[in-house]
Length: 305
Image (cartoon, rainbow, N blue to C red; front, side):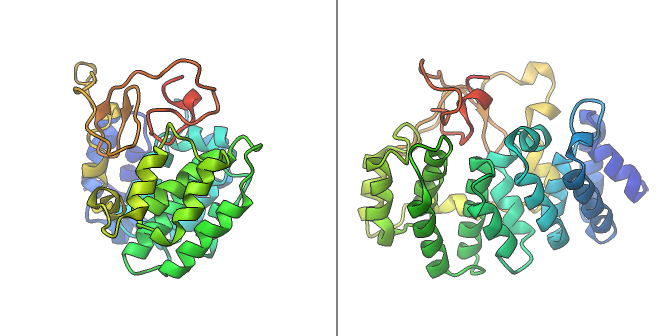
């Protein structure tokens, strides 16, 4: 049987076959692996430049193991990584920030929200990392681990701090709309719709008419609520559909995008199930604007890459 360090060396490798085999070997071995997983994530948080690039180990897959094993000690260093400047954060985690960070943060939640709230309130952090933290809190609310009244108050607080003249604030506004829909925050309908009026939420991310109708309905939309149900119980099963693990011949787009219930989508990006979803991005989208595909990433990091 492979040792702890052999497994984690392979998980952190840039070799798809080694990483895949190691993830499968790690399943069910949390008791012995957690201390080393946490130590490696802490090292990556402290020395991020030593953890990205083909010549360095890859920290990203370790986060999925931390989530699978409910490694609460990994929560704070993961948040530290998410609070790095956006270039370093994306170099380390890539699409994990927008696709899986909410579940990872919720699954490693230590029971107290202070560190997570620090991420969400951090105006210097990448807006997509902040949104991941907010969605994690929404997931924790659905699990009965975070009070709804506190979540509503937080959304209201953040909405009042946004400034349309700040480049990243409308991206945070998108996250507020997104989260309000996920938790069916009818109490905040006026606040959420007001973001559109102030230019603090992008109409090409979630249509204001859709948001207005959803928050006027007395019945939550199951499509919205189900986004909060995502959890990581098997790291390998979560990531096995990634293009990283597929031969070149299997990486082509897989048909037209599914209906998105009033949410807009674009280009080919990898969704939370590892599927490639195609869409053509419209012209004249600013490099730092949210990608019209609805992936949650900046255009320059998505369709405009």
